[in-house]
Amino acid sequence: MECEPEELQFLGAAGVYSASAQVLRGPHRLLFARIVTAFVLPLSALFLLGLAISHALFRHIEADGGSRLADFSSLKAQTKSV
Image 1: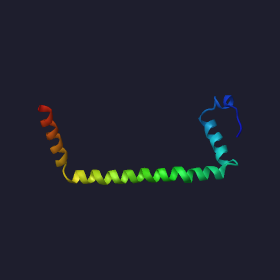
Image 2: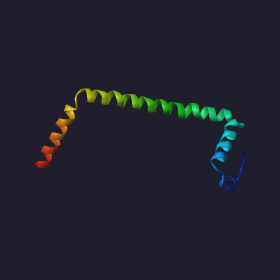
Image 3: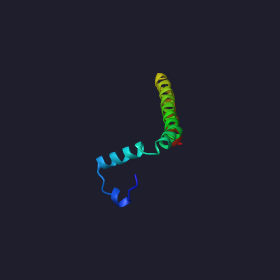
Image 4: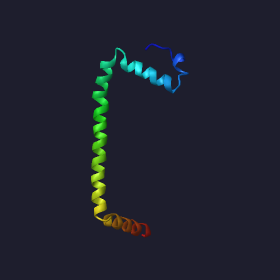
């Protein structure tokens, strides 16, 4: 799709959707698939891995009852009073 920026300036939501669909169906479909495979899928996997790790860590902290967190806040209060 070869359009001037002035032509694309006043597209609505439906126009943007149709223009993007034309790009995805166009001659650069293989290039788009390679970009998605190379960048988007690994980043999604890293994001989900980070969520899983943080969930496991917070579950461990909550199972501890937060006693370590309470100890840290009392230590912080003691250092402020000095």
